[in-house]
Structure formats: structure tokens, C-alpha cells
Image (cartoon, rainbow, N blue to C red; front, side, top):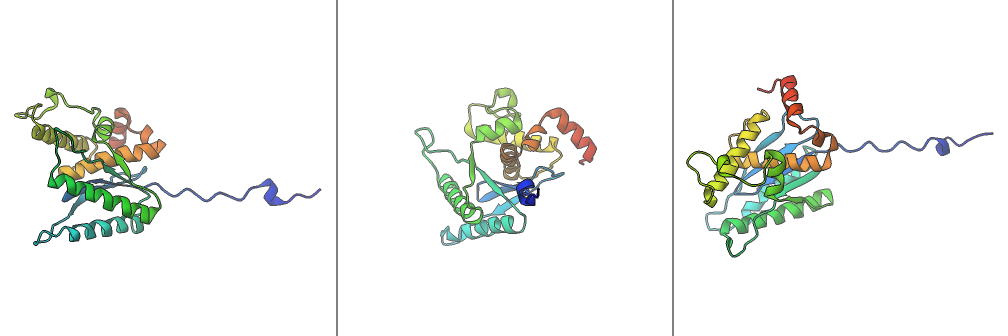
Length: 216
């Protein structure tokens, strides 16, 4: 009796494409981070998006589009995450900065869909902070000295300081708070799509890993 080899041994599956996440904290000083499961150190930085002298915002979006293209084509990014901006409400009527954040969301979504064939993922601030910082809300004890919990600007500053401190615990010495937020968003995003990375987020594992890697 003879057998057709293909009927006994199916053709080998294509190897899965390595996962690589690009995360944004949208602002005119736009924080970005690129992370992947096997990384010893992620990449991060700030993308400056400037309004033209005549007030035209169109030139702002060109560097953002070009950056996303480079991230996909040159760095192998497979997934994109960004923080969901605050929705206007009776307590927060919206600002010019907020409107630009929503425009950035549109640019990120359109270009992710064009380049990767799927949407970028919106992440709520409370969701990524709960995973990265271990808390989704602040208490007065979490506030930096001299800052008050009942003042929105003070809460925002304390969140930023908490995130930069957490990055330092990971061995990531970030000198820009928007880039620090992007790293937190990226950790959340990578944890949702990489089971191996998610399993490594416990504090004991991270401490042992940092010792093994001798992260300065």
C-alpha cells in the first residue's frame, strides 16, 4: 500500500509574524514607544507636531503619517495602540488641544488601517494605568508633594510623575512624560496580544529579569 505524503504530513504552517507594538500618547509633543515580547529595552521618543505659522494644521499630520509608515516598513510594527482622548461633557467642554487629539486619532486609525489592514486599538487611561501602575485612580497619598487631589491639573501632573517613576523601576529612564505614558500604553497593548509577555509582568519576575539583564 502506498500513501500520498501530503495526506499524512500536512504542509508546514507559515511561521507566525513576530509581534511588535507601536504605542502613542497623542499630543503636539507626541510620545511614542515600540515594544516586543523578547525586548531587553524598548524604543521610545517624542514626535514634534507643529502648527504652521499661519495657523494651518495640515502640516502637523505629515510627520505623523510618515512616522507610522517607517514604524511598519522599517521596524516591523504589527499592532498600534493609542490612548482614548477624553470625551467632552458638562464638566469638560473640550479644548483646542482636545480637538487636535481626536484629529491625531483619526490620522493614526486611517494609516494603521491602510498599512496593516486593521484598526489601531484605543486604550482608556484607567485601563493601562491599572495594569502598568497597579491603580486606575489616585489617592492623596499618591500625589506628589504640594499637589492636591481635588485639582485636575495636579492629578494630571501626579499621573505623569507616577508613570515616569514606574518606567525607572523597569530600568527605562525616560526624560519626557508623554514618552513615559506611551510606554505604559505599549505595555498594556503588548500584554493583550502576547500571552508570554503578559505572564512576565509580575513584580518578582521583573526584578529577577532586571538583575539578569543588568539594566542600568
